[in-house]
Image (cartoon, rainbow, N blue to C red):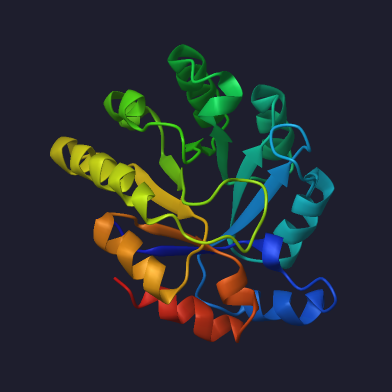
Length: 221
């Protein structure tokens, strides 16, 4: 597998002391920064817009790992690419799991010079995507229901990871497998053992020493 990447989720950033925590992130070993976009429709929560992404891009050296949980994925993919996304992941469910639409949007994102990711919710099967992993750069498996931070890890989602990893290895693909939801040192170890090479973590990182939290995940490989 590829080098392990940790992508801290700013959904859990302590906004009462953002300067301190952003400085810690900037000087950490985290390679990506996970930026959750929620529209209040696809999921029952509202988060960050493109201007906030532009600010984080200026403040931090990490790649911007943008996860759009929105109904209008095609429109907002371009909005957040324009704002500075390096990785743009959308939900298959937002496109009604229509493979042609999913692959078309992946191709569009790649044409714009950005890594294309597809995310699946806990109730969405991975099997329809397995024959098309070469056409995406990231498969994001949600290990909680999308919309809110701080939820418990759903270990059953690791079966999806194992199936995707087996296909990636069999075909020699470069697609990354990212997991998001309830990640800490214990669940992260399970995810890495199952085949994940990219870990999104929020509460676990931001509710302790940020450097220690990130490094404890990076040492799982």
